[in-house]
Image (cartoon, rainbow, N blue to C red):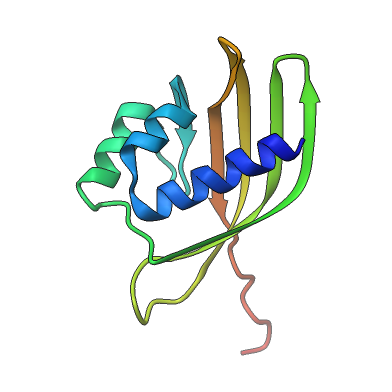
Length: 124
């Protein structure tokens, strides 16, 4: 599973750097993303949002908690934290990435990320 951990790290670094060429090679042409802003995007849309600077992070850290393989799929689950701009608060999220074996290479096929909502304080 260390190969998938390295792919996750390559994807994280490329996303942070908005390295579209690397992301294009790591992501399946069939990629579908359930984004943390409650929208569903395909690969082309996510790459366009990155290229346009609409998606842009100055910090992006991940913590993988579990990796499971089922035949030609690998499921990666954990948490991540992003910072969108200087002075903005960190955003904590939960994620699931699904990698699929395509022509001998693992490519990200599905991603879901959701923002962790802080519970309101009682009595305030």
